[in-house]
Image (cartoon, rainbow, N blue to C red; front, top):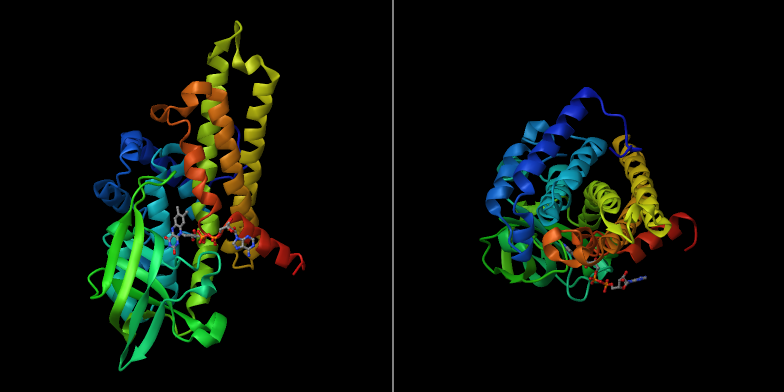
Length: 386
Ligand SMILES: Cc1cc2nc3c(=O)[nH]c(=O)nc-3n(C[C@H](O)[C@H](O)[C@H](O)COP(=O)(O)OP(=O)(O)OC[C@H]3O[C@@H](n4cnc5c(N)ncnc54)[C@H](O)[C@@H]3O)c2cc1C
């Protein structure tokens, strides 16, 4: 097996990771290619994942989650990357956990926690986070969605797009402006059940990768919500969103580290067995070099991932470590996905082999959770460049 530069696992972690590897390879990977071809989200598989405990990894045990810190969460998500060929399903689970369950757990008022958090952590209720708008992507402060005070509640209006899980979500964590003049302090978060009058979802179809993860647009038209639906204090939305992105930018990207290891193992196996010019591909130096580069990208990704996780676990400031991890892992996954395809030749671009899945699933990873360019902006700022 390929040696790894990941953390040494204690017996509890080893047992947990092995259980995830077994579950993912026996329950989640079978049929993945077919579901991907059909761009089909399978709620029954979601329920199985939820029952296994994969919908509430970082949520405290008192609320029905697993109470894992960032490093332990990464170990589980990396194991999914190694053994689960359904990248879209894992992406939906991660979006639910890191961009919705985490901010609700961290900032929800006791009444919200009591009413929803156990069902969110258990995966009975599926969440979507609605931040992006047609005119506000990287620049979330340009959002136009508004939450206007009205009596003892708010009225929400706006349009959100590219919302992961929207077509199947039971709850929406919606970000909207409560005070457009207040900048960073002008955004607030609200938790809206799907049945909220005036909330409408339009599913979008077809995505380059992560195809089994459904997404869509969310329209808010005169949505009246009680004050109790606000998550965190008024004006705390941007801070809440930032904290959730820290979790997402490190823990979700563990999936790509695991998937890169799977792609590397496949490339090595293929290069050893496929012969051209009477010799295995592995004997050609340009093929070897491509595989060596895949290995380098895998291990540098893993080092950056667990470095960010360790800082997060210790409660230390980790914005720059997390930005470097997100940027590096997503770019590395795209390049290693390309290399895997190249090593397989023609069979690398037939969808049924699944060789191209890493590449297709990694392309959106350079965009969601803040684009590669925005991660570079964060790192440049940390270096005192702006
Ligand atoms: C698979 C997927 C799932 C998603 N899920 C969700 C979700 O669940 N909820 C949600 O709210 N959103 C979601 N999004 C949306 C995502 O957050 C946005 O796509 C992302 O923030 C980029 O915004 P944009 O698409 O509008 O691109 P833009 O912001 O228009 O960017 C386009 C290009 O310009 C570059 N650019 C923009 N500004 C600058 C700058 N200042 N300096 C340098 N370059 C810049 C960008 O880096 C990018 O390359 C998802 C996106 C994808 C791909």
